[in-house]
Length: 72
Image (cartoon, rainbow, N blue to C red):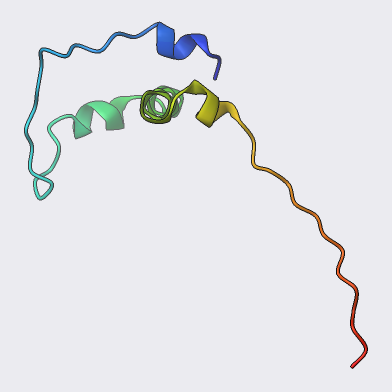
């Protein structure tokens, strides 16, 4: 994903939806009808909104260590 994904969307802060976690989501049929690429884009957008662009574009740090076998 490129960094322009987050800048191409706006959040409407005038809307609030209260839902129960025990009920089926109302938009489930919509998302199941979407192609996998659109669903992945939506997931990436939510990750960028929650964690920021830098946190989602970084890579895991590689750690390599050589340990000497002790004589014992």
